[in-house]
Image (cartoon, rainbow, N blue to C red; front, side, top):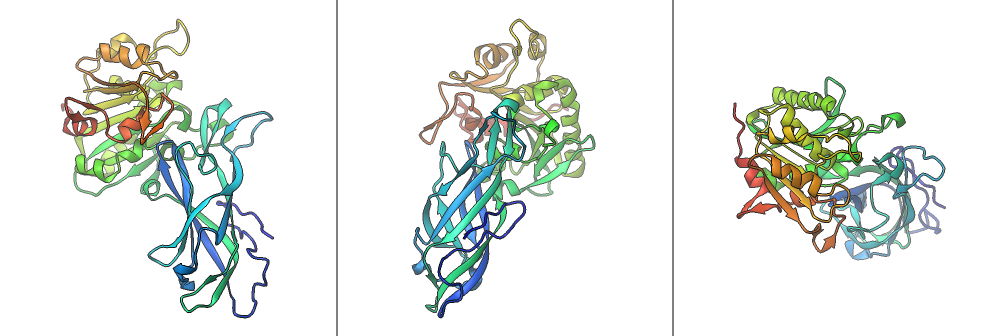
Length: 411
C-alpha cells in the first residue's frame, strides 16, 4: 500500500513493493527524495526527482525508466469556493523518461516536462482572484522492480520520504521584508561595487491578503523575468548585478502612487546594505510591473539609469476613465526607456498602451513583435516579457541588456 505525503509536512510516502521487505538476499531501505524544479518560460515545473540513495551504492546498469513510478498530486493552498476555477490542480502519473545516477550516487528520475504540458507545474492560477499560488505538491514514488548494489545484492526500497522542492536559480535569491512590510527576494553576486536591477512582477504574482496569502515565491517561479538577470550571460553583460524582486501586497495598478515609495524604500535598503553603484540602478517589469516601471520613473526621475517596461498598462482600466499614467507624465519621463510588446497582445493592447507611451516618452526605444514565440513554442501574446528574459530585443545590432548596462543615471 502507499500513503500520500506532502512536500510541506515531509511525511513518509509508504510501501513500495508487494514483495516482503526483508526477503532473503534483499537490502531493505528507507530513502528521502527531493523534487527538482526549473523555471521554464511558462512557469516552474518539477523536472526530476532525486532519491537519496548514495549510501546504497546502486549499480546504474540495474536502472531503467520503468524501475520506479511517480505519481503527482497538486492542490491549492487556499480553500476554494464551490465552482471556483484554478489552473492547474492535477492528480496523475508523471512519465519517467530515464533513471540515472548523479555524481553523488543518488538515483535521479527524469520526468517528461515542457511548455504547455499539464501535470508538472508548481503554481496554480485562481481565475476569480487573478493570482498565482504555490501548489501543495504530493509525490508518491513506487519501486516496481529490484535494483542491485555494485556488489550485486538486490535492493528493495521500503519507504520514500518526500523532502523539499529544490530550484537552484530560485533558491539563489534570499528572502527579505522591508521596513514597511513589503516582501522581496534578492540575488547577490558579490560585495564589490555592482549595479542593481529592480524587477517588478505582473498582476498574477502579488499577494492575496484577504486569503492570508503572501508567499514571496511566485514572483520568481511564474516566469523568468527576474531570473533572466541572474543568469551567467546577464551577469557577464552587467559585470555582476544585484537583482531585487519586490512582491506587491495586492497588484501594482491598484495604487501605484502608494506602492512607489515602498519600492523606493526597498531600493534604498539594498543600496544601504550592499555595495551598489548608485548610477547603475535599472528598473524593468511586465504587464502590471510594466506600468509600475513607468510609474517609478515618473515618481523618481533621477533614481534609475534605464527603464524597460514590457507590455505595460498606461491606458484607463475603464472605458472613458482617466489614464493610469497621464500623457503629461509620459512626456515628462527623462529616464532612458526601452519598451517591449507584441502586436497580438489582447490583454494589454499595444496601441493605447506601449505604442502610445513610445510616441510620448522623449527618445524612447521600442521592440514591437508580431507574436510571442520561443524555441518553437507559441505563447500567449501578452507574454512578451519572455523576449526580455532572453535578451532578444535589439535595435541596430544592440541588444536590450547591453543597452541597459551602458546607461548611467545623472546625479
